[in-house]
Length: 339
Image (cartoon, rainbow, N blue to C red):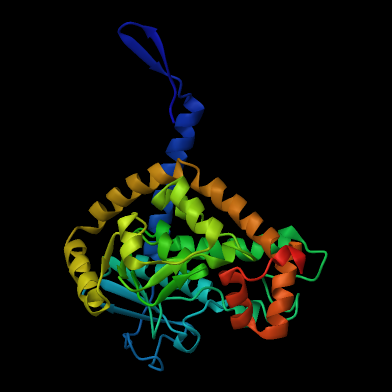
């Protein structure tokens, strides 16, 4: 925050130096430059079927569906057989799809959702946890290199944060589950509409994870964030709305209607007006230390997967499969420090 000192009963002088002014000016110029660069990219997206799990999609994407209708870009996670679990393809494709929507002057709003029974069940533990250490990003043979882990996870975090940094509003539609990395994606969106019976949370905070986007505290405050992350418990849509984690929760049968109603209110606002409001609000949050919190969280996430308990958890997944290991972790029946 800007500091002030009283120099007389009628005059207050700001301590902001010319150097700080230059930094602020450069920050604004960077925003303008990003906007211009996005607008200069030419895309020719194909209209695809939103709901078809095996429908034709833009050939740039393996794990998402992308379509545009009535000034709205729809980005749909499309790995329904695995509850849209995150693979290395997903963050990059999400990043590219957000850039595609931002570059399209016909798009006013971006809606992010998941195909099938859930929004997103987090990182694909069959791939990341059941595999041998060192065979896939996210786990290394010991001793591990924090730099290598940070480089991998930072890229994922930045991809999810493209929803936060998008020049256009992003709305997340949550049904089923938005857990672990899936909650990271959801909480990076500007607005969240959630089914009342859907579940959201970050169970890996018990063992083998730390939410790299660090969004929990900014949405619900320190104590509620600690309660959720100390326990790893899931909360339903009603509770998420009650504590302010999401903006709205509705019966599952009314979810599509609720999202459409919100989209209709937003898409008639000029793009520049939407941009102005979003930049002011984001700036407030970012000045509260979001970037430094994410940097720390990403480093600690790597530590959590390579700690003695993290190594024990991954070994357990290889022995009994990730579903059983996750059950043992989330129910608290195992003290991982004693394995």
